[in-house]
Image 1 (spheres, helix red, strand yellow):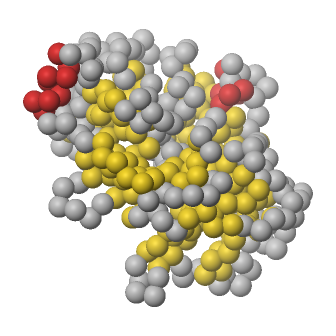
Image 2: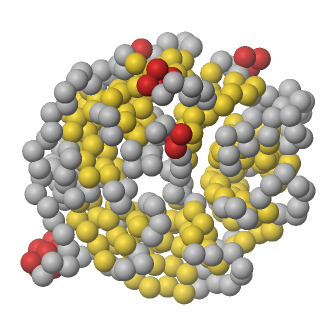
Length: 369
């Protein structure tokens, strides 16, 4: 296994490199006031873009078992998990309504957490299986199978995954440059993160170790967690092997991609609202108050849409699902009764109802032009 160290510098070194223009540290900008209230939306996506209709289908298979989408391959084809009819096993399947589900893999229902991440490109589907070994220690393997509904045997890519980390982000597992990429924790006294890669054509797992807590973002970037103590968020370009400091003031928590950051102002009672800013510190604006929360881990899908939930209006049927469109500056209603909400790439999907009334809905944000 190849390995190299990508060291997080000391504060003194950061300052020195900043003076040499190797690191970029920008001042905290003035916030841009919003021109409209930042509470619940008053206009729907369908009203803003007439003719927009989310895809919708029943949340059960022909055998009556419910399924949960993990990834939309297109607006009607999903990679999903579903129990077997007897409840003893969990299946990972590819499914299009009206077609028989293609089974990729099965695990015992006791093998929690089971299927922990999935990614796909035009040629293949890649997923992780995290199950306890004989000593009860969780072990993760990475598997692959050809894309499409045709039956094909799954192949294990590697079991050399370390202490793999999965947060629900679309970047937990990703395919780029002919390899699959993921992050793993370390067991040393000081926090560090292993960014791991394995060629899909075969070979050895390579590891780059970053000092501190990092996660993959949009390839080839990794981003550090938080910044709540005022030290800023580090954005590491793993291809160019350089790092940028994204300024975050003390008392704020930032989640960043290479382009945008979601910034939460933290108070005694929790987050006091949501702001967005570009990673160079520009275009900072408050988009939501304490009545809303982020609906998905990743900020700014397509570098344009922030997905939110109106938690103040939650009830037994669900809660309003919203999107903020940074192009128009509007917050728009997607659904009034969303339960489970997920997003990957251009697609945000959500459930409504339960048991016999369970449905899944999907909105392709790329169509909102």
